[in-house]
Amino acid sequence: MPKYIGAIDQGTTSTRFLLFDENGVVVQYHQLEHRQYFPKPGWVEHDPDEIWTNTVRTIRETLQKAGISASEVAALGITNQRETVIPFDPATGEVYHKAIVWQDLRGTDIIDGLRTEVEESWLRERSGLLFSPYFSASKIKWMLDNVPGLREKAESGRCIFGTIDCFLTYKLTGQIVTDVTNASRYMLMNIGTLEWDDELCKLFDIPKRALPKIRPSIGEVYGKCTLFGSAIPVCGILGDQQAALFGQACFEPGEAKCTYGTGCFMLVNTGERLCLSRYGLISTVAFQVKGERPIYALEGSIAVAGSLVQWARDNLKLVEDAPQLSELAAQVPDSGGVYIVPAFAGLFAPYWRSDARGVIAGLTGYVNRSHICRAVLEATAFQAYDIFEAMEKDSGIALKALKVDGGLTNSAPLMEFQADLLGLPVIRPKVIETTALGAAYAAGLSIGIWQNRKNLSRYWKEQIRWTPGMEETVRSDKIALWRKAVSRTLGWTEKRD
Image (cartoon, rainbow, N blue to C red; front, side):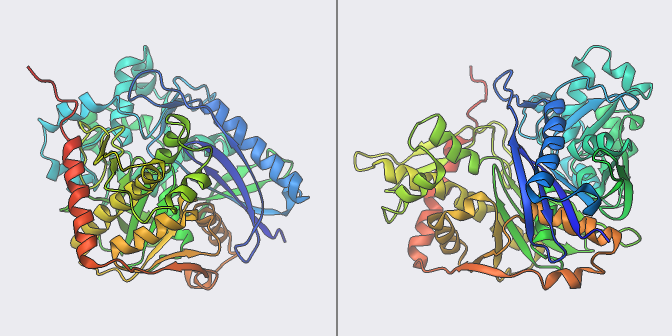
């Protein structure tokens, strides 16, 4: 019997393929970056063909490095950057336009126009989401309105608007599907019925036939991949943040995780209860096993986290790499009164202000490079705190700890400060590839390598724990100044007489 599970982890800046064994341990992996396209301010695109080529290369390279044949791979799972959408021909695979990335803001005018037509409460109850160009619907609407001939193709069945999981599954198997976690990010799916919603599609003027079939995340084989000489089942799909929640074994209501990557995403499992936010969070599908009721989550999304470190490295030339930034930040006890609000593309949760733009506040002659580096890290912790506070208010759950993952968790100053702000333990697991691990778990469960989620819980092991130590008065003062800095970003792009 094949004994390895493969996971395609297609992210915002790179594509990785990881092989896991039956104990959830990484055996081998390979990673390739892809180009970022910025055709206009606020616009972000990827080349789908480059992503597909990189996907095939990472699988091939991983198998070669591991000395493993495709016949030894029992299943492939997929996890992906969400909201990023690709228009392609379901018959030929021809791509009609570059992928419009989740960070892209070109749908802002569309969203602003719809705000005047319907109440946001109606949208929240139907989709679990809030009006924002972050989600896929406004990106699809923009393409239908601006790419010549695309609406005709969409209405005649010659165009599918698929998120990355849909595109990769099609390229691997020929099937046109997406799972419930990715579908819940379109702003076109009814969060209660888990089906494309007639009223939402009408609101955005998007033909339902141009959307993929919605399937459960776990429990069925979508198709088989024969690229590498063996028919490998493709049988587990989870959007990247839901995959990280699953990989962190947050299977019970009240368990939460935060992923510190390009962006920063905090989710709390709310079980079968669909909890609609009153404090700026969104409701999303955490996962669904075939034949079972969906499990929901509350989510807070931050657009700029790890990408702020990259910006400090590449644009400001403050440091040569991320470890150096963390080392400099550790040389000072605080940020010297500096607060950075990285609203490069507006603010996501819990503010949802696309008119915001970034600021560096509190500069004095005392401040040096180390203080700026520390402020870069603290910006992510403050944003996560805002989400955490809203999450507890919305869910009514007093969280006892926060499981963390992602590249920025390698920064001890950031994790220590995060624990101080939250006032509770921050815990990183031994296996930090939680996003890919979640996809591998989904695939393995689908074909019976693991029998149930309880079996998987025993694989989760703590590696390091950061505990709070900041005085309450200091914490309160810092949070107050952070919110003052946030207030300075709002309304920046508003037109004035």
